[in-house]
Image (cartoon, rainbow, N blue to C red; front, side):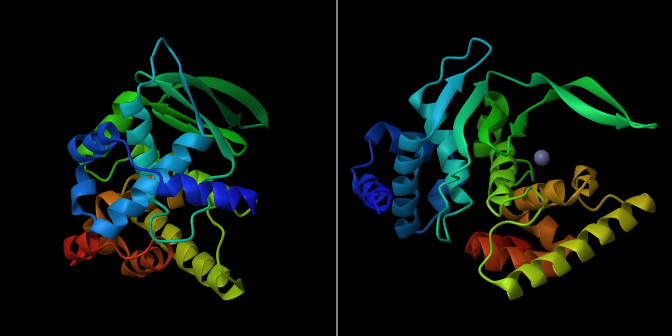
Length: 254
Ligand SMILES: [Zn+2]
C-alpha cells in the first residue's frame, strides 16, 4: 500500500522542463501520443527513474537525458495496461556502445562453451538490464525500422513477470494464457517454416526460442507494425489486446 501511495505521489509531481525537452526532441513517437498518454508516460517515467539505478560502464557518464530516453521507451510497453513497473529490474547498466559479453553455448556431446559475443543489450531474469547507449538513442529517434533494443530487453522483463522466461508474460486469466500460447506457438512454427524455405518475413533471430520470438515481435509491434501485421495478423491482434491499441500502429498496419 505504501508503495502504491508513493508511486501515486511521484506520478503527480511536476515533470521537469529539461526532461520534457528531451522527450520532444529525442523520442520520435512522443509527439504522436494523445495528450493524456503523454501525461501518463511522464508519471511512469518519474516512477521508473526513482526506482531504478543507472550505472555507467566503459567510461560512460550517465546523464539525465540518457535516463529519460531509456525510461520513456521501457514505459511505452506498459502505457496501456496496469503497469508492473518492471519489478525484477533494479539496475540498468549502460555502455557507450556495443559491448562484449560471454554467451554460453551447448556444443554436441553436452560440452558447454563460453563464447565472447558482441551485444547491444541483455536482460537478466533477476536484477538488471544491460544496454548500449548508441543503440538506445537510435531506437528512440529512428523509429519504424523494426529495431529497438530497449523494447526488446524490457519485453524480456515483462516475460519474466510470470515467474519464468518462456515467452509468456503475466496475463489476466487461464483463457488468456491458453490463447497466448496457441497464437505464439503457431506463429513461431510459421516463422520456422518460412525460414526453412529460405524466406525471411521478419528477423530470423526471433526463431531462436519463444522468449526471443516474443521480444523481437514486440519490437515490430511498436516500431514496424505493418511488418508484423503482414507476417501474422492474429499475432498483431494478440498484441493489440495485450499492449493496447496505438492508433498510429493501426494506420501503419492497414
Ligand atoms: Zn533477447
